[in-house]
Structures are given as C-alpha cells and as structure tokens.
Image 1: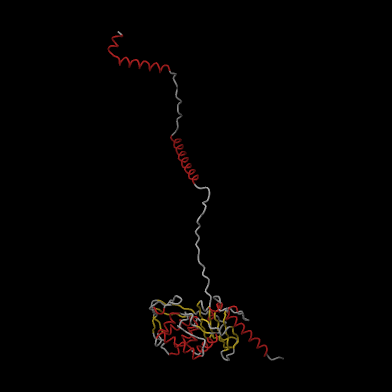
Image 2 (image 1 turned 30 degrees about the vertical axis):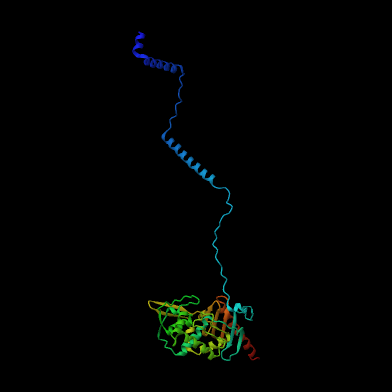
Length: 360
C-alpha cells in the first residue's frame, strides 16, 4: 500500500511530503514565545508626541544654526561713517587785513566805525575810518540817489528779467522773472528790504542801460568828494563795490537831503501786488521798529567779503548824527554797535549837561 502511494505521487510528491513533515517537526521542537503586547495609545497622545517631535526637530535646527555661527569677530570689520566736510567761514576783507584785532573804547563788533555830528561835522568817534572795504548793499543808497536825481517817472512800469538774476552770489529773490512793478515800488523794495533784482532793474531801465547807470554812480561819487569809492554794479553783490567810512558818511548826508530816500529807507514794511498775489516785505533794519530810536535814513548790507554793514542818520540826545559801521561780526553785531554808540552819546550828553549846570 505504501508502494502504491509512492507510485502515485512520484518523487516530487515524496519530497514535498517529507519537507512538510520536517517543518512541522521543527515548529513543534521550538518553544513557543509570546510577544509582548503594545500598550494602547490614544489619538490625542499620538498628536502630542508628534508635536513634541516637530518641536524637537525645530530646536535641533536652531542649535545647528547657532553652532554654525562664528564665535569670534572677523579680523577686520568695515564700519561706514558719514563724513561731512566742514567748510570754515570765509574771512571778510577786514578780518584778512587784521582790522578786527584793533581795540576801541566801545568794544565794537565792527572793524570800521565812524560817528559824525551832521550839523557841525564834528567826529565823535572813529575806528579805521579810512580803510577801504567792500560795502555790500550800502551800494543801493547811491543807486537810489542816482535814480532820484535823474528825475525818472516813479509810476512807470518796469519788468524783472533774467538779466536781473544774481549770478555773483546766487542769492534768491521773491520777484520772479516777468514780474511787473513800478519804478517807485522797485525803489521802495531796494532801499527798505535790500531787494537785489529790484535794484538791478532800476539800473537797467536807466537811459543808456546798466553801463551808463554805473558810470553815473561813479561820477556822482566823484562830485561828492568820495575819492575812496568805486562801483561796478548797482546791487552791492560784487565785492568790487568799495568805499571808506568817511566816504559813506558823505553819501548818507547827501541822501538825507532827498525826502523820498528818507521815507522809503525807513518804511517799516511794504506790500506789493505782483499779478495774482501780494508780497509782504519788511525793513532789513530791526531798529526801525524800536521806539527808542529816531532814524531819519538807513541802509543795511551784507556779503561775506564785507561782513555786516550799517549806515544811519539818527537823532540821539538832541544831536543829528551820522553813523557808519562796516565789517561787523555776528548777525546782530551791527545792531549792538549802534546801541552802544547811542548809549555812549547819551552818557556824554548827560556829563556835559552836569558840567554846565549853574551852581547855587
């Protein structure tokens, strides 16, 4: 029976049967091993574990980044600083000549000063009064004198053009190119607030043009005996316009004889209509609005070569005085000088009055 079964299965079947019986024997030979059962974990705890892992991974990245950063400073660090070039203020001609180093009894800021009694021509105070220096916009006093003496129509309209633009100092003006105003208005702005384009336009609209006007300025200076004086243009922007305190005292005295120059130069303020708008101008001399002063004529001036300048005719302690201050240092230096002179003259007057007071 067994042989019959082998014959039916053949060799392959015997092999298969043998392998099957042997595998069962091996399984039965091995000791059964029970696997440890895994604890049941809720979905919430799984989420917390996953979140913790993500945080741990992020923290590990941060640690890696920190470790990658250099712990020592590089050998050379480039630090960029903004360096601004400081340009020293330009010296005035008076400073260059050493005139500021000369002391005076009033300790004035101006390197040149002169105080004269207009009626008697008595010199009350002088300091470097023969020095010839740039005079800046004091020039406009001669500009006004020439216009007035020429008898030109003050109601005639004149126009500001590109020829009136300042190409010397590059200063600005509120009078735009194309502005139309009367000659009288231009005179007012030039003398009261030192408007440069207005002054230049006055010269251009003179018979013969600007060259003829400048020639007349120099001729008038010569007629007045201003031998230290020279003009090259009518505004004072050029440092080539020069004079001395002595000559300027002569000019102030001559200009004071013209009521128009007195009125316009001492006007506190002025409005001028220029098309669609009205411009408000103020006097460049703050002493005009000071009630302690009685000023009959004045003009201020400034360019770097000239320093702060001021000329005035004023009544002080019952005397008609002409004051000239050139090359004053500081923005208010010339005003301080005028105040010191006024107090000094008033003090001198009080001393004289005390001496002549009858006794007994």
